[in-house]
Image: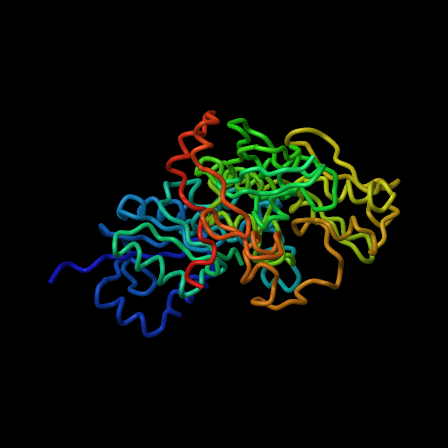
Amino acid sequence: MTAKIKIATTSLAGCFGCHMSFLDIDERLLKLADIVEFDRSPLTDIEHCGPCDIGLIEGGVCNSENVHVLREFRNNCKILVAVGACAINGGLPALRNFFKLEDCLLEAYQDGIGVDNPQIPNDPELPLLLDKVRPVHEIVKIDYFMPGCPPSADVFWHYLNALIEGRDPTLPYELVHYD
Amino acid sequence: MSGTLCIDGIAVPFSDGQTIIEAARSAGVYIPYLCHRPGYAPYGSCKLCTVKVNGRTNTACTLPAADGQTVISNSPDLQHDRQRITQMLFVEGNHFCPSCEKSGNCQLQAVAYHQNMLDNHYPHFYAQRELDASHPDILIDHDRCIFCNLCVRASKEKDGKEVFGIAGRGIHKRLIVNSPTGKLKDSDISVNDEAAHVCPTGAILVKRSAYLAPIGARIYDHHPISEVACEKEVIKAGEASGYPSCDQTKLAQNGGPDSHYAATMPPAPDIKHDR
């Protein structure tokens, strides 16, 4: 038996909605599981990425940890795919780009309505926030982009099938959606 | 003057005074555009409709059709340029489709879908732009303005008012409102004005009209803009069009930097595949 295709996935500044949509391929997951094996992914709890064939990145880049994870994926994955609106253009988290970071923190943790025990979190274990949320292609080279908020299960299926078979993924008109 | 021009191998008839884009549209041949609108004077600012006419680069929305013109619209390099232009529009403003009321009915988005644009390629500007929600019936979200000037032209030429203008140049360019406060509520605009309805993006919206059509029933959910714009099945090069095809070899004879496409030009992308 030939070795299984290795796939790693992660959610950076995302909502895990793209991962949920991925799971929406439903019973096709069984077919997929016959030929692929998951490395680092929220589905496996593997902490660090080993050499992989395909890396799926959900979410944009909002803090220092996101940068490290993204670089780890780039260093280990032959093919890196930006998955969903946030990875492609920053998406909803990037709406904070129109405010000063300090103002966002004050609003969320100090001055906002209903905040108990107001204090800005500063535990050294917390990754530092970037000044602005950035799309992943501004940090590392991205090979393919999967648009959608989230990309539908059929988009995942189209892309993974193409990549596994060694083809360039193409999407029919009705699967290209930014929303 | 009237006659026939040749667009991507399709013989397209035209009548007196038509531009290339108008002649193409009447014949069901789609050339992408955003700043053009049927019934409006030629403007030529967005450059999406750039084509090669007898080997020279021109905007199809401003160049009058002439007998015997050989027009290349769907060549790989022109399609590549169109995608880059569209990507620049996306990164220069703030186009977050998932939270936009116009999504699914948006010409900018539809043009990008038509090009199978899957990423924005360039670094994002995240430009700081204000929202003007002052008017009781009309909203301006400057984040989504692409400076096509359609609202400016509609207000002036169709509504007989001068509500909108474009100020500044380059990256400082911005849509301004002709009122003492600069706010839309103090301007002459009314919700029945054409200027309130011509925006090709979600920059000028009529309030209380958002999300009326569910996903699946929006303008571009099932029909590419190439079909919607031509209001009939789009003609693909090489297909029976009702119009005779014109001689591809003539393209090569006309020379110009694109003449090498004449022999190898692929058919127009099949926008209906897999449906």
